[in-house]
Image 1 (spheres, rainbow, N blue to C red):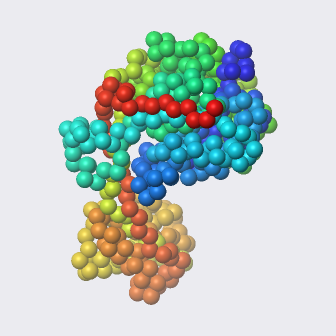
Image 2 (tube, one colour; image 1 turned 180 degrees about the horizontal axis):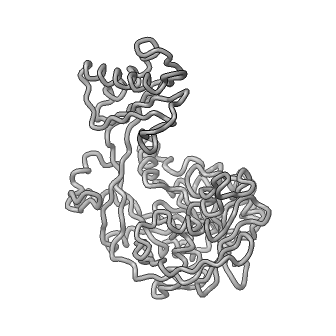
Image 3 (cartoon, rainbow, N blue to C red; image 1 turned 120 degrees about the vertical axis):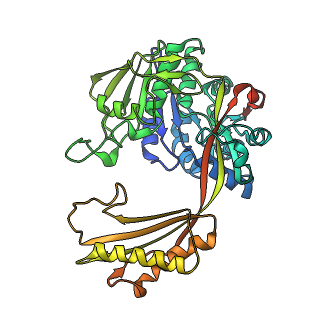
Length: 451
């Protein structure tokens, strides 16, 4: 830790395809101790499990090499430790690729610690009685279509990896805030008995986990919530004290905004119950949280509370769930909306005539109804984009929707144009189960790679 009075942790990414320049800016100008990349969404790891089945050397986040190539030179030069879940379904291969890349960049043999144990696919297969949280059914109903199951591990396993002194920690599935909490637990020697500090670190991680969302990205609204130089938006960092107090800020001179309002918006993101937010590290309560604007682009956060962690891990079960078929086409000029409605009805009639049926069929008039439904009193648009989407277990039935939609060019209401090629994609769905912690304790492996 370079700083003596606090620990500075930068949020390098908020999702797998996040922008890379803000992370480079943090590494080069942010004077940070740790750079954390959070790159796994709910379905991402199941998608990478599919990739790994096709190629056992893959299965990590596809942009791993690009992201690491951009930040490694500054991180190695400035002794900044990296923590990331870009390992996804294959953290071992991710570590190998990172070390290989470091050598190619002339940085030497950069050491990586690999966190494994989150893949609990075989455990779930062995316990078909586990209850699906979303519907109460046994997980047995998903097993024939299951791709993989991954548990949300906590900060404790990352702390063990940090104790190896490796510069880079690469994990699979861990809870997003845990990636940030772990460096605090390691540097300040916090234990899970330090509930207020664990709660504070979890809040801090929750605020940083989505990257630039807390520094103005998802806050900006022209004329209503102004954020300067959004095209140069900077990622956030946190300065954390040993007692758990912390502030959120960003690199001086970068675009964006860190204010009480931006912090509040990110705080409520995915929180569900603010008094009982369950993570692998604690049950968080933010109802008495204090936010103070200390200075321009710096907000202090105080008074987080927490209860002890639960005896279980949440597990995401990824499974194949059929196909989505889509077609789009545009109508313009007078009466465009009515022609689009007629076109939608024609496609549905023709699909029935061909003997197809669908579990779900959605019709959108983009610009009118695709987000909130068709309003009763809205000015007739000059142009409208018709979108038809279905869900079905049959790939042939999914393909038919785009075919019939494209056929409207010559076989439907006048003025159709600007279509797209029929789109068909397999559906990767997720459900959740809980498993006891002790089931996977013995499967957590920490391996130091390199010197």
